[in-house]
Length: 324
Ligand SMILES: Nc1ncnc2c1ncn2[C@@H]1O[C@H](COP(=O)(O)OP(=O)(O)OP(=O)(O)O)[C@@H](O)[C@H]1O
Ligand SMILES: [Mg+2]
Image 1 (spheres, rainbow, N blue to C red):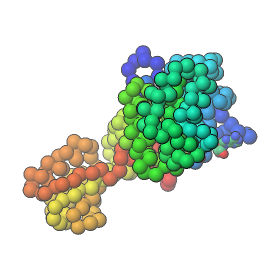
Image 2 (image 1 turned 180 degrees about the horizontal axis):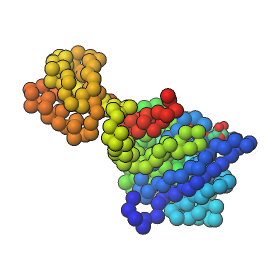
Image 3 (image 1 turned 45 degrees about the vertical axis):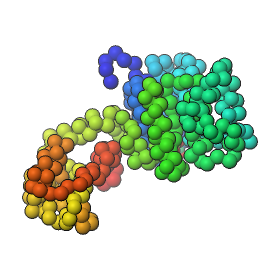
Image 4 (image 1 turned 30 degrees about the vertical axis):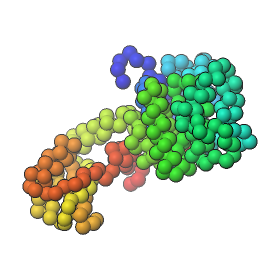
């Protein structure tokens, strides 16, 4: 984030308790403008509580939240105009059509122009379903309708609580593509999930929440670099090694003499005849060097796939204290 730009969401030292039990404990993070920010944590970590505080539905007991520079406690009305909030497991009215549903909410949001409903139907690809009864839609389509609803007042910042939970892989990919499109329109998207891989390839930044505390937050590439540096300083072998899957034509076992004992190579496994999984300690430049070495040695290499995403590595590193 560049200096001087107001973060889309700024959360500082947030505490919240229910019935004498602290569910948020000093939660602090920033969401930069234009980011897709993943708020990740297991069930009960406090994601929904944080989101309800951001959406002005709860008042912080201590701490401060600013949305686009506006304090939610001071001016909740202005904040509500800026955000599109989609609750988890929200019901939809069933006995009306898709179009009626959106027209109803457009009225509620005092959005005058009828073109807005058309524009939102087109953006969310629901145009062909506009005369369909909401009751007869699939779960994925209902979720899409929820998203359409929060877009009606053209909010700058979307706050989505578990937008992909309960969806099949196809519906999930479609929602993900829609989020990418919304981001390209200049929106900032904050979304929560308890499933890590659901978010891995769309998020630019994350915060990982555990029992009411943020264990790590920031841009994914920065966190990954920080973890790498910490490992380099202690000169310890990484606790979570990187693993890459190599696919070759012919027998993968032929790679053994080329890789065994090479600097950085920790382990080689062969889960299938044409596949080798190499655990290594190194960065992307190291990986590029290894691939070059294999190709130059005549290996018919057809695939190089990281076995874990950067986000999964971050998660494992950041939460390992609790796992021991
Ligand atoms: N209204 C409430 N009254 C009392 N306790 C609550 C209330 N809402 C949430 N809690 C408790 O606060 C903690 C955090 O809940 P929260 O719903 O914020 O977690 P979450 O991360 O959204 O979990 P999930 O992944 O299950 O949605 C949990 O221990 C929950 O039981
Ligand atoms: Mg929740």
